[in-house]
Every structure is written in C-alpha cells, then in structure tokens.
Image 1 (cartoon, rainbow, N blue to C red):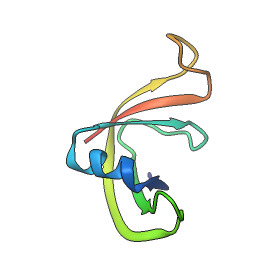
Image 2 (cartoon, one colour):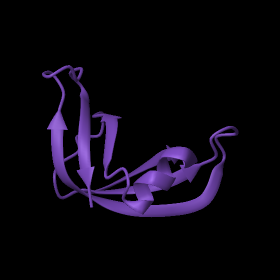
Image 3 (cartoon, rainbow, N blue to C red):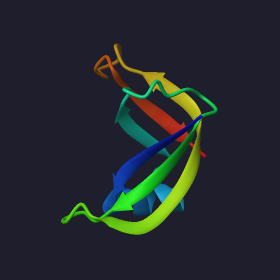
Image 4 (cartoon, rainbow, N blue to C red):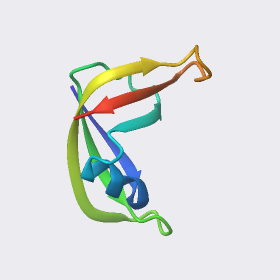
Length: 79
C-alpha cells in the first residue's frame, strides 16, 4: 500500500538525506511494515506545496501505548 502525506520542508530535508530515517505520526492510516509513503513537501511558513515529492518504504513500526508514546501514534523507521 502507498500512503500520500505532507511533510514540512524543514523535516523533509533531514528525512530525504537520511539524517532522520524515522517519522513520528498519528497512525490514522493503519501503517504497516512494507508500505510506502509518498511525501509531498510543503513550505514551512505558507504550507503551500513546493513541488518536491519523494518516496520511502516503512522498514519498522513502533506503535504507541507504551514507553511514553501515546496510543494511536507510531514511529516508523524508513528506507
């Protein structure tokens, strides 16, 4: 499955370069290991699309409800 979501430019830079190979999100899309995420980058201030889009695969999924992460949220390791 492929999920299309927006990401602020300031976070997208680190994520795209591999410096931040994880993403913290509300798990309202039923993310699964093996799914793909298509990130649509938006401007930090105007929230308008920049036109830059990139794609990552979910390698690992930590679901909330323990260790301080609220239930309904997840941390995904991306590749």
